[in-house]
Image (cartoon, rainbow, N blue to C red; front, side):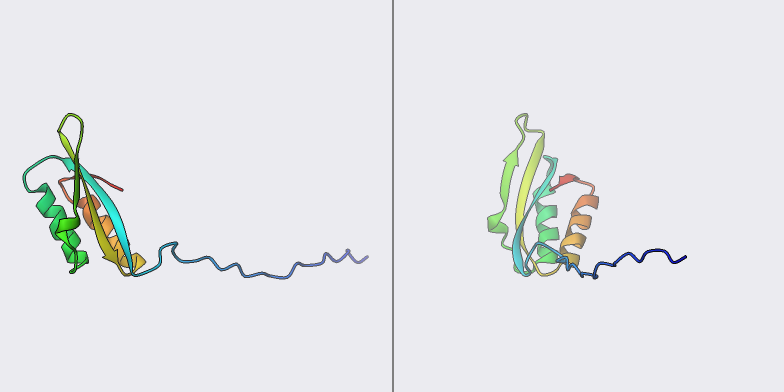
Length: 101
């Protein structure tokens, strides 16, 4: 006895974009840590290492209500997903950094 044949549906390749970001792109990154001497300089140096054309004049700073923490927004030009991932890893592992968004 033959089993009924189930029609197979055609394979449809669904292409997923590798990233929702188009490269190169200006990309803002918020970094938070304790308000301490050298914190802004350290983040500026990291941003400049990943984006040699980084303009430190575009940095935005925001203190927490109590003044203990500092939020730093840097806008860098990213050219690839790999570069962006490595920038996040570098910032996240810096000893002065508490959070990277």
